[in-house]
Image (cartoon, rainbow, N blue to C red; front, side, top):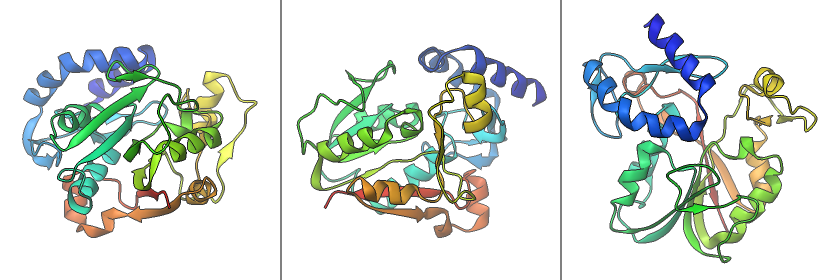
Length: 258
């Protein structure tokens, strides 16, 4: 797998994300065919493989990228939570999905109970090209918002959170995943760091502007949400966490608008 690891790191470093999304539609079936097996299972589509793929911009994580859905640890954990703990797949609701992940995009689009709206500035999967800090939606428009691994890219994340709060209906809920360092008490950010290489060293990725710490839930509460960090991997035995290749202890940031 050493050659695959080097190839993936090179591809991630060379191509911008919109290009990677388009390329992935071509390579995904090939990867899934050659890596088929029975050691690890992707709970999103139920397919099993002898290994998952490595992934990471600065620090490569081994055996985390599903060959079939291209899901990572956070996607598989979120899928399990949504399926087991919410009515997203059964009750009618209007869902706003930022930077829609391939692992979810087509599956959500096919659900007859969802009024499904996707948005992003650059993603080719987005219905609405929009700035998260200036959304073109009416207030109190959506029952559910999924905004995952977006806020760490946004310099004014407080403005972004105010917009998310504005367009969510009272009583509505959302999940706003971010890269969260639970060993860090306070979120690290420095607006003076603009060089991509320096951002990579400090924040872990060339286009990140902060590293969230344990205070992330307080940041969400300060924006007006009721918020909690759900340690959902605790619901599964260690062998299931390993089989699904989840990140043990990862928190799901669940928010509600009072």
